[in-house]
Amino acid sequence: MGSVRPKPTKRRVFALAWQGSTEPIGERFGELTNWLSARTGLAITPRMALSYVELERMVRTGQAHMAWLPPLVYLRLEREGQVAHLVKSERAGHPSFHSAIIVRADSRIRTLETLKGARAAWVEVKLTALGLGAQ
Image (cartoon, rainbow, N blue to C red; front, side, top):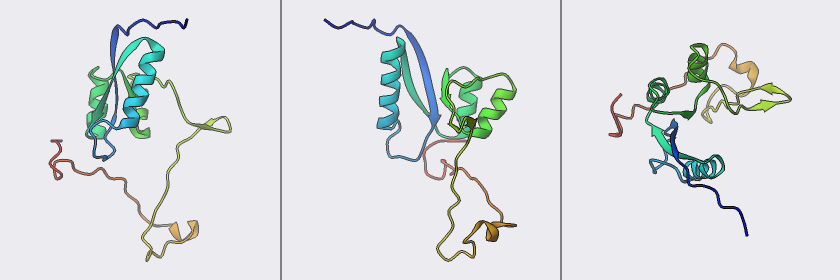
């Protein structure tokens, strides 16, 4: 006979920024929070923030007890003593962040050398323009 885990009693919210999928809470995120709930004994509820600004606010105000944070939001909150990491990406024993630079097929940029002096911007879609929320 296998062991029976007690029903989760403490409710916690795990938040992350909406990734533009058609589902408000993605299936994989729901699977992750269910898996965490089963292993921790906590009732972990997934919650989606519509922007990084909202995600940061949720952490600051205690509306989110855990969050998957983008690097700049994490650094700001960590410097203020608001958060501590539980899991981080490491490669060869060093923390890291991975990203990709994608250019149009007709771009002059083809190598790192031709990237020198170029400008880049990381933007967030205005969800109000999509009719999905106010910011």
